[in-house]
Image (cartoon, rainbow, N blue to C red; front, side):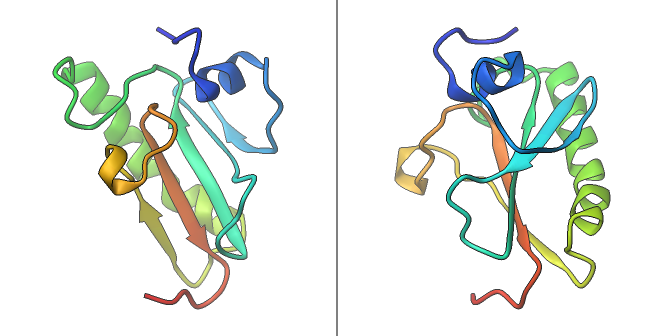
Length: 114
């Protein structure tokens, strides 16, 4: 289920353009519009939920998150992160989450500072 007001849901529906690098029936990966590394992509699930700690996290959503985490290395390697990459998931306002649709930043393509 998608949220009418969510930026990432609008990207999934094609209402907002994105530079897609991977898509299947479960997830979408696109380039970040404000990259913080040579390679900076966002991986999102096609089902909307805000946080890993959502009260409605069930077995289906857990399986989707696991699928995405297992697919990210393949997508990262195919997009310039052959020597390694970083995955970041900001969870909540205090962590800097600005779009409340679960997503993972995939960063690499260079040696990243800590």
